Image (cartoon, rainbow, N blue to C red; front, side, top):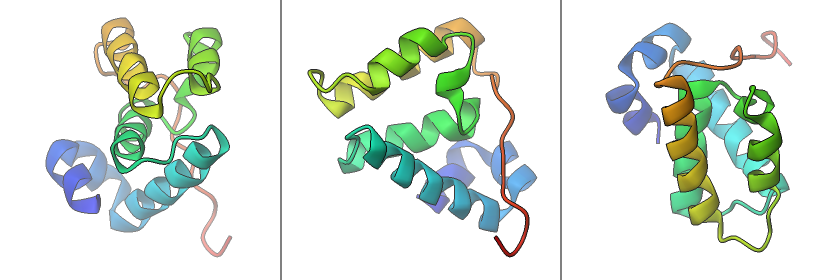
Length: 107
């Protein structure tokens, strides 16, 4: 997944550096688990959303819709994430919507 981020989000990869990209991936996997997002495909899309829009993109101005979509157990994870990606891209034109957060070194 680090290679995919480096290839598809080169500017973010260079901005964050590999350690923070790995940290973002770990955060996405943990966060995905909280919402039942656990397939390889859905986690890849969640990682993409977090790299593109910020780690807590579901707190963006689209937050009410995004939170409902993230927490909707009736919809398959892949469908939820693809719908969120489409809506976020349309609403933001690919710009981050929340700041990326990284814990201080050693935490």
